[in-house]
Image (tube, rainbow, N blue to C red; front, side, top):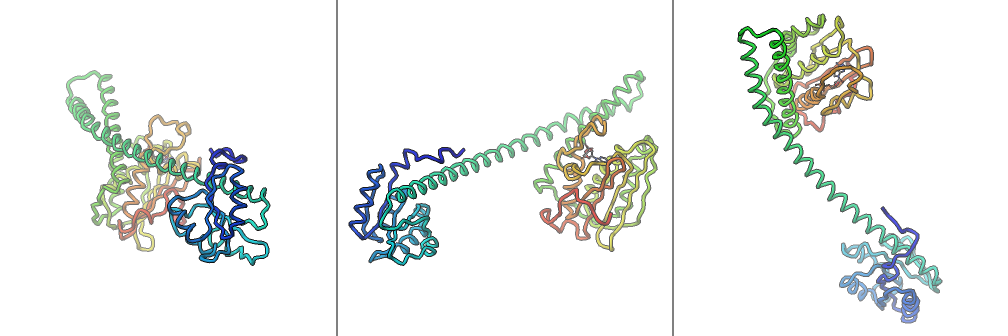
Length: 403
Ligand code: ADP
């Protein structure tokens, strides 16, 4: 908080002021007048001397005569401003009324103000105290800026520690989760006459462990992709065939929803990391199924726009997404308010994973959606997949004109 703007502080009243003038009468007059106001005054009769005195002990403010024989005030000021240690000292020029005083030159050399001889003492003092106050406020701002920078650096370090700790915990969670999954698999596979209710409970436990394991893996992958530590295994792959495989793996879910997904397009070969893109497609299909009511429609299109790169879009007739969430859902843990969908569980990691995976290929991902009408999620991968840098990729969530 910057306080005390309207009043002189103790330190301003006792400020160290250097008065530089070759005229002994002026020097005496100014010094006496300012000392009577409590300032600590250093009278200096020449420009060169003033520079040396300022360098050995920088004053809080300098009153500088323009016309001096050895070095004029403009040059003294210019040299002060060229010295890092002295450049912030406010310089007020002293000029005589009858002198030709070049104000533009005075300000361009770094002067902050000027006073004219014969002096109006109240005016001189008012200008001095104003510039001392401005200098004090400037120092306070610099100090607070440094404090903010320090706090920001500390927060950044803490955030990095937090992220590393989360990764470690999530990583260590995976081993026991895999063991739980494995034992549940074994129990469920063995038809050892378990009562139906127990079997049902075990299946639910199995589903939940699977979900947790997948979530832990996605969280780790998102972290690795964010830090650029996930290398791409680029191979030629037909995205049309990949979508068919993904649909096949989701057959049970599709049948449960009484939805007949429609697949359009044709063979679309592209260089990509097949496993990553498979997970992107599964995520998009899974979401389309999750947010589309029974008997709704899902349409998938795989194409190569203008024979360059590949484009996959998944359009559903689900609940849709309000525009203000279009960018947020691609962020980590970004979700549309849970109440809107009435779904019990959602981690908000799936689309963040998709965005990072597509960006790692130098591609773009986005959505077009209207509440009540449905959504179209799409992504494009350039033919030189992975060549573009992540920085050059436009933000996710933007609408595509070609959708
Ligand atoms: P999760 O993995 O938890 O489903 P996602 O990152 O995949 O999270 O999705 C983020 C949010 O985007 C979801 O919680 C949901 O609100 C919204 N969303 C994603 N896909 C669709 C869709 N096809 N229709 C409606 N809302 C969707």
